[in-house]
Amino acid sequence: MPDGSGHMQPFLEQALAGASSFAGAGTGWVDALRKAGADAYAVHGLPRRRDEYWRYTNLNALAEGAFELASDVTDVSLPDLPLGAAGDIAGARVVFVDGRMRPELSDLGALPDGVVVESLDAVLASAPGRLEPWLGRAVRLADMPMAALNTAFLRDGMVITVEDGILLNAPIHMVSLTTKDGSMIQPRHLVVLGEGASVTLVETHVGLSNAAGFNNIVSEVFLGEGARLDHFVLQNESMARVHLSGAAVEIAEGASYDSFVLQSGGLIGRNEIRAYLNGPGADCKLDGVYMGTDRQV
Image 1 (cartoon, rainbow, N blue to C red):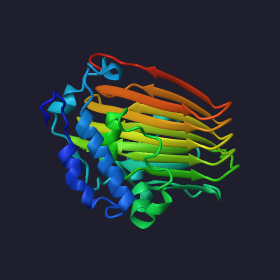
Image 2: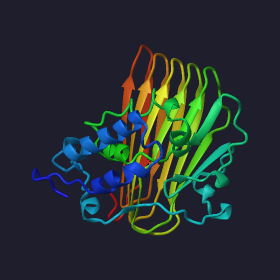
Image 3: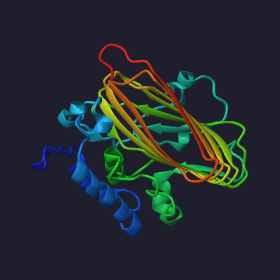
Image 4: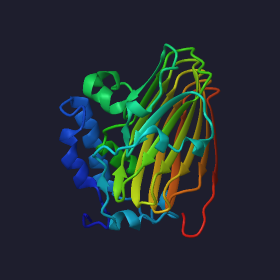
């Protein structure tokens, strides 16, 4: 809804209404983080084309849409997973369906000691204090309005923590499926690599139907001194779906972040990365290929 200044804040009422039922509700710092996201989004609203960073992205489809946060569990089996979309990737697999992690479809058995991949929802429910040093610390809410909205909806996502010195030989492959027409997902991912650790993370985002919807994905990445993250993203969502992705990456001395994004799906596909080089020798490489056709942006 407009606030009298020309700003639009679609989805804010949904976030405020759902906050008390999301995991971690009642934990002081978690409640404060969700509120900070809601407050920032209330001030800035949906980005408009007069905003310099968004001048080529028209989000009227969001302001006019009636997207609802996906809540019920979709019945999906392993044969339904379009794993071939990202090639034959050997390694750990993490599956999300409509924004919720599905352990029964994931395969994390090959991960070595010192590498933990888990659901944000589960950690917020059982041990939220483990996340307090990291969650919400990399994203500047005033500069990333869609990340502010994502923070207001803070519910589920992927948490990866890797101890110092661990070199993971096989990649971690996150598969995110969307299945519902008119659905909205707001995943929040957190990646923390210790000093000297090295990981390859592959993300595949696909839809099982040509359904309209809205993905608003935010990742926070913390790389310790000398750590390395190679991050590959394939977005091949429904041609009727809006897919917005934002990442905030904190890169310590001597660490490196190497990102490659391939986008071929979505009515609107946007990938925004804010990288912060926090010491000598910190390195960041951002590459991508965008294959738009017809009415795609």
